[in-house]
Length: 447
Ligand code: ASP
Ligand code: MG
Image 1 (tube, rainbow, N blue to C red):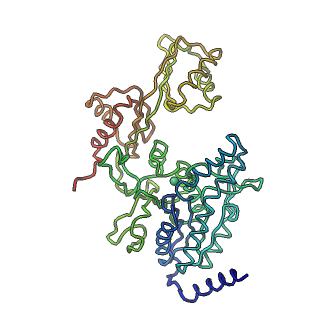
Image 2 (cartoon, protein in one colour):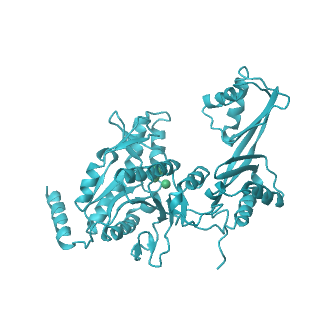
């Protein structure tokens, strides 16, 4: 009881002593912090200053937090240690706890700064998901509680990565799922922007560890970001970008470690320079690049089936055999049957799936006829991405030329409206990415 009184007194004192100056409501924001931004109490205190700045600017705010860096890995380890094979619902009960800790800490710290705040677990919002424990999808968010709390001048602090399944049990959204929680909440409360604070200061034209001259993009379209995310730019969970595109949620990726107290105006500093990267609708991007990014995915294996008897249904049988084994196939190339009888089919799978894929195809050889099967591991997929490709001819040919000039052999090619990808020997991956990056004028200027 004395502890409770003490707490109550503290809350009263905070409210009397530190009235926060605040303008009328300007906009509604979701602010999400990743694991490295909330890795310990001190870092949470630092991150909270970004919330304070936005709150004082007059915004209504929902904060979404990840678990402290490393926590989720530790929790998963414990679950596996308890029993390698375990009930997915209990797995979720365990791994969802990391975010609860950070949500509570963030709410305490905000209150300590004089900003009224309360934490919400996914089920308290509620964030409703399907039953796919461990990889659940959000089906609905009832925003009523959040809107009421914000209307009462309070900040909502919500656990990322989780919700409640129809059975009433906690369900988690898959690794990196807090990004998706943030976007889903932003859509539900009709936020003006969803700010993803992380340990990098935005989305880059390429991986800066491979291309030292990679530049931060000020703006990128949802579609381009989706390609980048699925092609290995790990800034955002792919699902979160899909969701943002579907609901037209403007997403900003920016660094937590920027000075939280620096004056800024709607995601730009005082000189109007954008902080971080804005992921937005194509229409919002005035100067469209032909190519906005170059990505690489290593560890691709290619498999070729030669002399496949060509008749309706063979492709369905071949890829059906792989799908039955839940092997994800990426690039697919099928030749036309020159003699009208047989054809060659080549496709890629992740290196780790190579042996399993070969086995599955051999086991299914009664479902389709072929002469030979061959393949190898150790290829890399290099892609150039840009919405400008829709209206500019010759991007693919210039890409092939640039690679040829470096003596790099192309094994496979696939294209989409805004992307051209080639498969090459992994050994030349870095060289290819750097060459294409310069070739398309993406290198940052020396200063
Ligand atoms: N904590 C979860 C993870 O590490 C979710 C997230 O941080 O987005 O995957
Ligand atoms: Mg993340």
